[in-house]
Image (cartoon, rainbow, N blue to C red; front, side, top):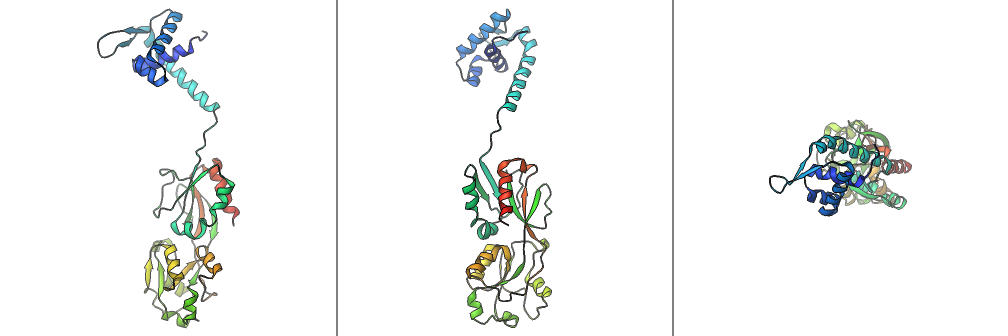
Length: 298
């Protein structure tokens, strides 16, 4: 059967769902009179009535027997038509790229480099989520991020970004005040980074001392801070000696704000920085571009 009066069919389908010309008019953004006219033309073409008009009762429109028989197939037809059109129309790309990183990684590494990505990709609006808690990438609409650990995050795809070493760092002023050798370390306060739980494998002053055969220091005493960037800032300010994470302190070492009083002593660490993204994320151009950009920096 040749399909005529497509606008009338649409008007009928919407009015039949709402049992109201007024509500159908609101959905289709036309006037109730236009809905009524389209339905009337359709009825004339079909040679049947589709609605019984009533002036009282719960609803002014009642579907006729013929309308009730044809409506399910007509509704399915419009649903199939909408689905087909969605396949032809290009997928709208969300311009927001949400990146999750720790506050310390953002402050000490990413922010000083991020302008390069924004300049190269002005079509995307970059948002950094520096929440200290572990985020659910799917539930919280996180596209990609950098995590620090052993690489065992269920439900996320990953790629190694950077390894890291850990070593003592301090302000140059502390060296001037007498921090010349390990024998002097006991004369200076230690700074402790509590941003990661003990079970994470992040080294403490105790594990650093054990690996390097350093004795006679009180490895538990000193200022304890639960933010890596704040630990670094405390060291820069001369408040003590910190175990510096190579990725986070490199800029401060290069600028002379920090020094390594014992340059040959490091601590083995199993933790590293990983790029992580939600499953199938690399199918999205913006996520793949950010991942490639991060890896290009290495």
